[in-house]
Image (cartoon, rainbow, N blue to C red; front, side, top):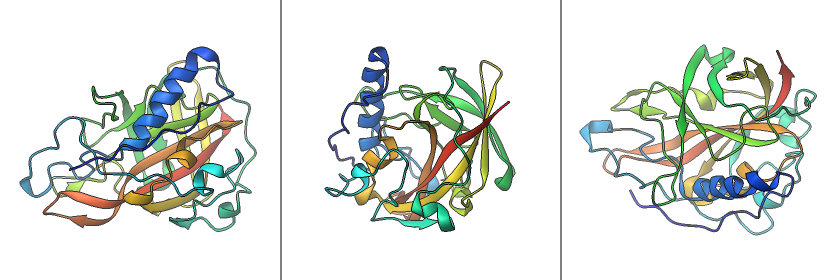
Length: 248
């Protein structure tokens, strides 16, 4: 698989100084990521070498990256589901952001899914690691933690060796569905889905996914679209956009 480097979004203005570098790294990784080996070793193909990822293009000028922090944009190039949430109105009142605390588990009741979380970091070439276990999702550590201010990112494989992986059903989520993330500080944060969108990899909205936020957001990411068994490659990405609406 080949990857194409694109420029990273502007520095997140609201993060504290010691988080800004991490935010830039996260944005840069998203610009080259998503997702290395989404299909795993499908059809017996060898796993992708470390650092190789399907290409992602730069968002169109004035498009996804220019959306306000309230997530009013639908991305322009991708198809979305979720009814009224596409207008950016959301489906729940946002809660005040929490201090940083690493996530340990994710649960999505509508999918009957529960997964502990791997920690994903940067590969030596600047691309994002992907989960080693296809049955587990992974949290991208250079970015915000779920519940802290900004767009936390959790990624997972859709298939692996022809079998279903952890995020196989992610594209079936709808606006209003909930996502629960349990953190190391023993707090469980609830996120409510605003919308679900699918984007061709060449039009992946890096800025929209990782833009600056004035609240605690969450993005779930996997592959989607058509699968090419010869290239072991999905041609699209599915992104779930959500915001924190509760804490327990």
